Image (cartoon, rainbow, N blue to C red; front, side, top):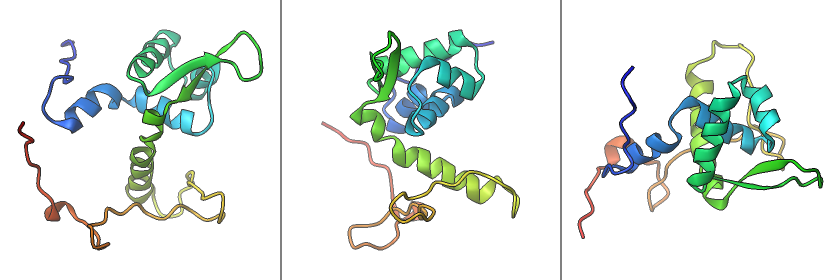
Length: 149
């Protein structure tokens, strides 16, 4: 197997982001953190992943400032992993992946989880990018420009 080539110095923000959180385990850890998981054992049971891989991914997410380790909230000797403000900013990404999966990866009527707005009790509406004037913004309405100094 070829070693993973780091994209941490790439000029593309998507490449750098995928390099950091683009593997399935990292994204699923972040998803579980949004769902309230905080302890190593809870992540391990939820994801069914090997402890050494979980330890590695948690370490990388802490190093990147996405998660923070802190003493357990119940006063026990355990450590907990909590999303940092930077990690919280990944919420739209997780929601976008969820909504895309709901729309394209389940047969009609097939059971799946749904993200609910606690205030209304209704499913979270689809994410839509909007232009400055409030209109929907499509990929064809955008372009990538290199930032020069």
